[in-house]
Length: 274
Ligand SMILES: Nc1ncnc2c1ncn2[C@@H]1O[C@H](COP(=O)(O)OP(=O)(O)OP(=O)(O)O)[C@@H](O)[C@H]1O
Ligand SMILES: [Mg+2]
Image 1 (cartoon, helix red, strand yellow):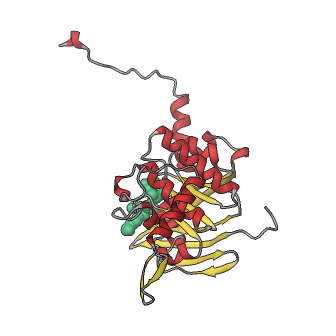
Image 2 (cartoon, rainbow, N blue to C red):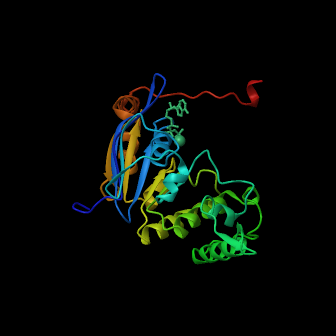
Image 3 (cartoon, protein in one colour):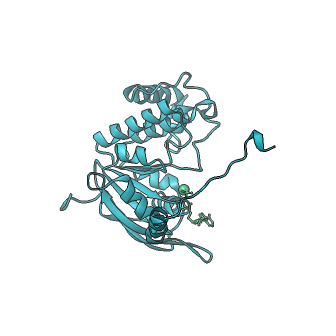
């Protein structure tokens, strides 16, 4: 990767909420065609970090460069128009709109009616949406149903279709598989690979270590707002990554427990005790 221009460069990003430092001078690079896992315990600062990249939060310090150019987004829509698509952990798609309206959200196709009036070109948007969903082998039973009637996996798939349709430069996913059944999880992982094969890098936040090891090329680990480490998947294993996530103190305690000479007796009460 050395020598190539990263698609995304994050330099010393910093964010505080009152007295709490949520993201503490974090830097990272993401290159074309790689899937990067972002791991860390609850509250480590992962969502806050990606919300700054995607325009949902304004950083209190640091810079974001997209294809070498410093960018500063005031809204997620601005970031999306510049090619950063994000699936948020806590902000869903527009629930009352259908899949095609969500794919075109903020970038609606208009047409002239009677030569004067500008109206939404719904047939065009439906056609285009159907095509991109078919291309990705995503099946949505009724394209005109509001998003709220879709399953979690179908919603994730619609977000991914939006990224593909608009030729996103970067796809950010915050816990995309957390609420999904196993077949839907597999579908999302497959779509992540499809994005990578199309050259779209993916920044994937997940608590599911197996998912991350299945699709990521590299992982970045955050702990208490700071970057605790960065390793290539081919050079590491789950234990090492957990070690980075939880830190040296915890590792020490675990080691002491493992080496403790005395047996631990677990007492249970069964029916005979009553
Ligand atoms: N809007 C907010 N206002 C105040 N504090 C916040 C806000 N958002 C996040 N925080 C705090 O910032 C820290 C980082 O939170 P963040 O949501 O980024 O963690 P996370 O790594 O995404 O955790 P999780 O894995 O649980 O989603 C936490 O201590 C959290 O309580
Ligand atoms: Mg989070």
